[in-house]
Length: 479
Image (tube, rainbow, N blue to C red; front, side):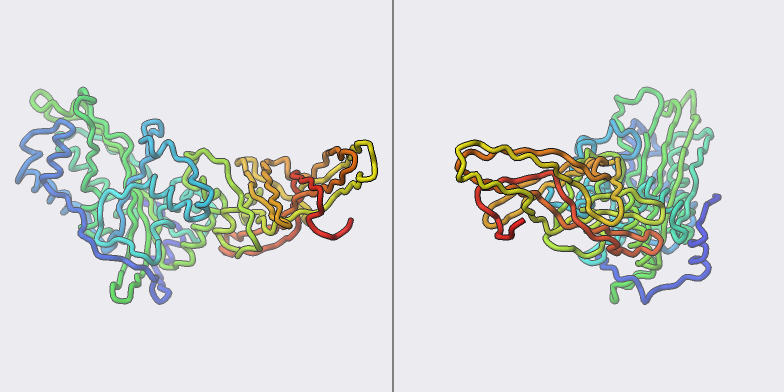
């Protein structure tokens, strides 16, 4: 099998290095095996009931597949299925209907919810991830096809290896065709990892690979539809030290078609077509993994990092004070137009009100109208170019002198320039009125995608188009 490997992966193959081990907490578990009785059920579910699918013959078929695949040392701590693979319209309702959770769930906590909805764990490997580490979140994120493509193009140190899509055709007896599918899928996975995967892991990966179609839905041809496995991998795990030499992920996509697959007598062999591909990334440096994970989250935004499957009106957080320069802050802020080397977001914090007008009409018998041109927008040293891909909403409140001032701003690309509008308010006879504008401190947060470093590079104010009138001052300062 021909594979494509990055220079970074070749370098690490030739000169592996370990940073005193990668901390990871894995708990032993009973791996899922290819059990003849269970495979028989899967085959029967698609209408295959011959002697080749039962008992000793089936066990022998499984053994032949296992022996035909070269195995290695990598093992798994999670076998998943991407439920959005293939035809989106046929995906289950819980996946197609994903909405952003309540605004109290933000940042990487939001991504974890979305990952658990979309990626269903369908088998156990030798291990499962414990309370520390949480590498499965990062690995499942970077293997997403669009994220993987972005990292290949933009990150010279992305340690990828892939087996490009290939279509294998031939004429086989039905069970031979399925055996060949198992064999080719396992071989693609091992080829894409280069290091190879141990036999127990391979069994777990493909323990339920025969998709359970209803026999009544199939006339004469079998089509598995788009199938996939996403496997999180670990190398050289030391349970005592809770460290490993490397972590990674391999994704295998396939589709199996068999013509007239139920016919055994007049047509013992059937035209078979298997389309298959695999891609992987293997890390011995956890900082590189975190850098790549942060990069795709920052570039694509946390809420949409897994694709365009979510209805997004992004809520921008207003922090109480300037938060740390990190991915969680970035993911809750206003995404700016970025280039290939940097990703930037405007961080909002410390909302307040400033007095912009006052009329004392207490000694008059006539109503007074107050008209003023007001400026709103970003008061920063550099222009803030907002991405047109999202509709951002800034929704919060200011509490001043016991009075709550709520505000809501839709942050579209119109906010890339300062805006001026005329406002007016009327003050009845014998009354006084104070006019306030909501302002928010802001700072530009930059991610250097090549270095994986966050930093604040600009500070300023955001003058909203939200106003509040009161009959008493909220603070004592005069204009």
